[in-house]
Image (cartoon, rainbow, N blue to C red; front, side, top):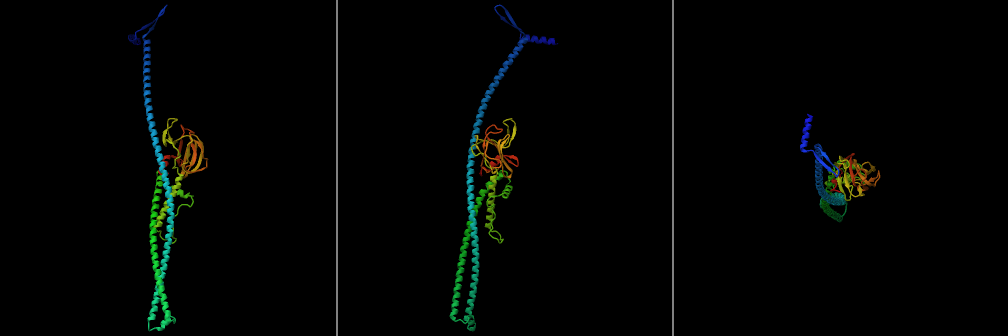
Length: 443
């Protein structure tokens, strides 16, 4: 069976690749090389494989060349789009910075106006209290004067009745103590003058009371205008701060309570107004004033808390935002890993600033982070500044928002010069842009 198959296969090869001889002739001899069908088949297969490889390789080279051209064009288009987007973001950042500066100036102007208005309000309330006391004294004096006038009138009437009585001359003599009629006339004249003086004093007192009432009414109008201006100023000042804290996801009530407990500023928190020790019900102006003082206290607490929370940007010079918070591809391994902060790229040595008040807890080399600065802030918040080229602070040092803490570099596990910035709350990383975006319309 095998012999038949071999014979048929050989016969087929003989028909396709008949045996050939290649003669090699020299001057003295002639030789030939026999090419059997199997040898020709191997040569043909090898040649076909070589030609096929050449065709495939040429096609691959051509396709790669075409694809590379497309990729280069696409890369150029992407780079142009990216640069345009960066320029747009830079313009938006500059616009936001200008708006924040204007808002800060308005905020400072509102605070100055509030301080002046508060002083005017306190002076006005003190003046009003003094006027009310003066009116009470005048009214008391007026009542006493009127009682004395009525008494004098009754005495004059009694003396006249006794003088006109013809049946009781002895009573008249006893009443005047034996004085002559001229003395009685003088007494009556003096009594009439005193009566007229009392009436004139009473009229003056009533006129003065009317003037004081008008002055009090005008003061009330002025107070109402001052209150309205203060209330508008407080609304403009408090609402953006309250919105900023809520957008950052911060529990405002707990933060305000902690700030009050740890308050160490000069003068302490604002206290309610009290003008009376008699325990009487507060007036409408006192209620409005106390409400304003409460809002001013809230504004003060917000201001103190804002200094302790990382709302500011760590880079104040021109920069590029190169990587956000979340999962990303690791440039070293190619796998996906959690990026626990945000990256800002700028020239080597760019100044880096603390984003809130706090205490430096670490300042040195850390594996992966390179040169690292850690700052502990209030409310369990910590910020980290990694890959620095130079550290400008020491462990235990107190820093304020905006202080220069280091220079941008490429130390540690990096692919280029940039700052890796982290925010951690209770030891867990959060997106730093939540705080930065919440404050971009305020600071």
